[in-house]
Image 1 (spheres, rainbow, N blue to C red):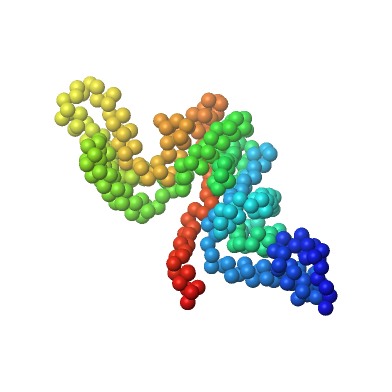
Image 2 (cartoon, one colour):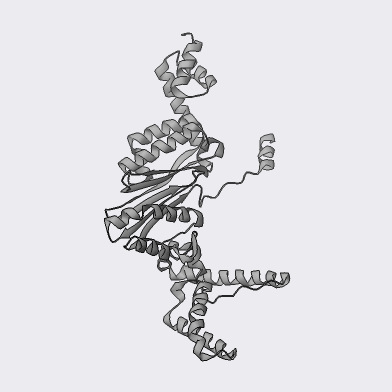
Length: 350
C-alpha cells in the first residue's frame, strides 16, 4: 500500500476544496491514486447532495446583468439552505458566473442549464460548498431601438428587477433609461405581481373582494374602539369591476349626497370629479397593491406608475408605455420547513 503523505492530502484538498480528513480517507482507499481519490470525493459529494434533497433551500442570492447598450438584461435566483452560505465568497462567485452564463447563452429553462457543460461545473462548485444549492429560476428581457430598458438589484442582493417601456423614438427610449431605473426601484419595493388590472382573472377578483372588504370592516371595528376616523368600506376592489353602469350609479349617488347637503348645484361640477376620483381610489385596492401600472408611484404618490412614465416621456418630447417587467425575490413562495428541535432530540435519543 502506498504511503499517503501530508503533501498529497494538501494537493487533493487544494484541487477539490473537500475537508482534510475526507481527502486523507479517500487517498488511503485509493492507495494514493490522486485521480481515483478525486472520483471518490465526487461520488461522495453527489451522495451527500442526494441526502440533502429533502431540505429546503430558501435563502440565497439574486443575480443581475445588463448589456452595456441596454439591449438586454438577465435576472436569476440561486437558493441555498442558509444565509451563512449565501454570504460565502464561493457562493457569490457562483451566482455571478451563472448569471453571466445565462445572459450569454440563454438556456431555455433550468433543465437545459443543468444539462449544459456549465451546469456540470455548477454542480462541482455546489459539491465544494457542501449544502443544498439550486438554480431556481431566471428570466431575460430584451429591447429594440425604441424600447427603453433598465434594471435594479437591491443592496441586499435578494431582489432583482428588469423593466421595459415602448417609446415613440430611439431618442425617447435612451432619455427614459434613468427614469426606468426609478421604476425598477419602485417595483423592487412595492412588489407588483402583474402589469395591469386587465391581467386579473375575474374569478380571482371575485374571491378577493369578499375577503378584502371584511378586512376593512374588522379594521373599522378597531378604529371605533380607538375613536379614530373610519375607513371607507368599498363595494369593489378592482377597476375591472367598475363598469360604466357602476360609475354612473356612483356619480348619481354623489349628486344625491350633494343635494341632501344642500350644496348649490352650480358648484357640483367642481366637487364631483374629486368625489369620483375618491370612489375609484377606494374601490381599486387590489390594483394598487398588485398591478404595477396602477400602483401609486413611490416618488410621486399623486400619480400612478403609468401616469408617471407618461409624464416623464412627455417631458422629453415623446411617449412611453411600460410593456413588461420581471421581479425576482429570493425565497418568494418557498415554504420553509420548521424544524421541531425537541422532536429531533427525542428521535436521536431513541
